[in-house]
Image 1 (cartoon, rainbow, N blue to C red):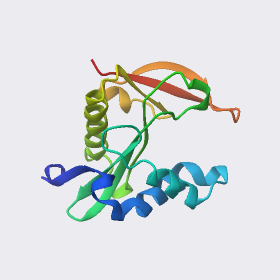
Image 2: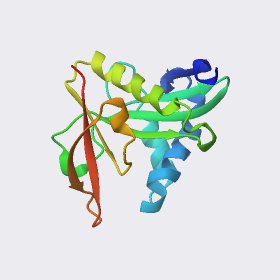
Image 3: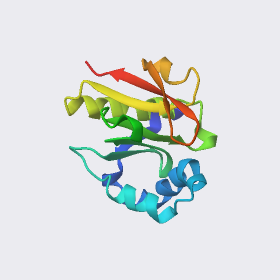
Image 4: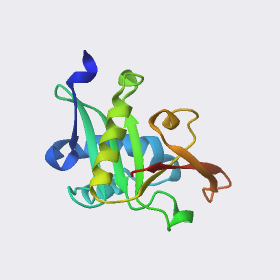
Length: 157
């Protein structure tokens, strides 16, 4: 079965994919805010840790990178008091709805739990996706551009 062949690894252990996954993140979230691809690559280069935050994980199927997720200190300027955050969860379109996103989330939860945090946070506009993994809606929050987002929390205990 496909999903049993997917491996989730720290990007630090397979750095050759850094620019590729940085471009995915840039296209998905940053490009519309007039940021440059170089900014996303720079942020990714400084997310190469294995025992502290920030971290990035990639999903690989055979030799192809098919997804990425990050653990960041913050993903919402208005809530500097909340940390850490699961951020930038992205799965290539042809691999969506096959369990890859779930594997990436599980790895982030496992790694964050090892660092002795009580909670993990995320922001999203998705409906009924993260709830399936046990994420709980916390509140709506302003993004600063006139739009709101939803904050979710995962209890790591």
